[in-house]
Length: 130
Image (cartoon, rainbow, N blue to C red):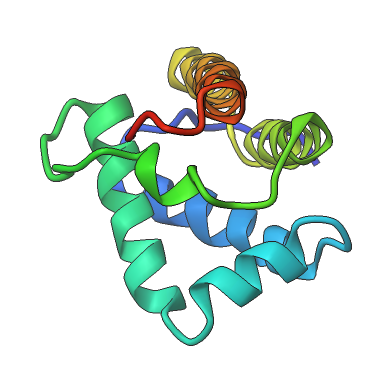
């Protein structure tokens, strides 16, 4: 099945986020980390992710926050980011095609790179506060 539509609405964002995090929860590497961290708060987490991606991709400013701090103390490294990006890219590619789909993958890659850089910095400078 070939994806036919771009990411153009909040409905599209919700489809992307719900499908992606459904895969995350079932993933052998990422599932245990996310499920332990989020516990029973998946609806709240998904709502935050809807607002984040709605702000980033649709320029509808519904997200206010700092995405990095919640990740600062998580037991994650390059393999986790690689798997996260692989699942995200697969999800986008299966569901969407177009400029916003390309942008979503680009932004996810940039975010993963930035998070890894910040985590490396914190690891090497443990007395700095996020």
